[in-house]
Length: 196
Image (cartoon, rainbow, N blue to C red; front, side):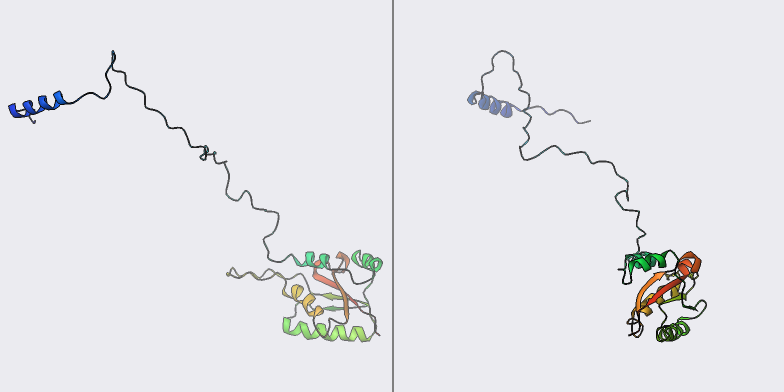
């Protein structure tokens, strides 16, 4: 343990000289009272921080949508403008109209189905048919678990595109999913324009 240091005679004389020459800043009155430290007033521009409301991750996400980039095929068909007579379209949607001809593409590859569909629509238009039924099937779930999802029912998705492109686009007035009695989601009604 370190011993306390004592002042030498020179240091004591120097200290006495310093204390005789100094004057106190304030003269003490009675007891020495220490003033409480002043608390700084907050600046007017700074406000009290608001508490952060509690939340759960993902609460603000709209989970009603299916997160697809495109609406489903059925939604696209229902949103398409009606080109044909509305009364006839109502009957068509309820399955009250009988198709004049039908083709079954179910089980075909795309390479087989495209020319078969093209030939069928061209023959039907030249024969004067107005309503034909194109059966595609609902398709099989072929997702192989890869990074790119595959569409459910390749022909089901491809046929409406083929019907809107040349040489069929000019012949087709309306495409709609068929009524359940004619195949439901696995078939399409194709309403053809009148031959001129």
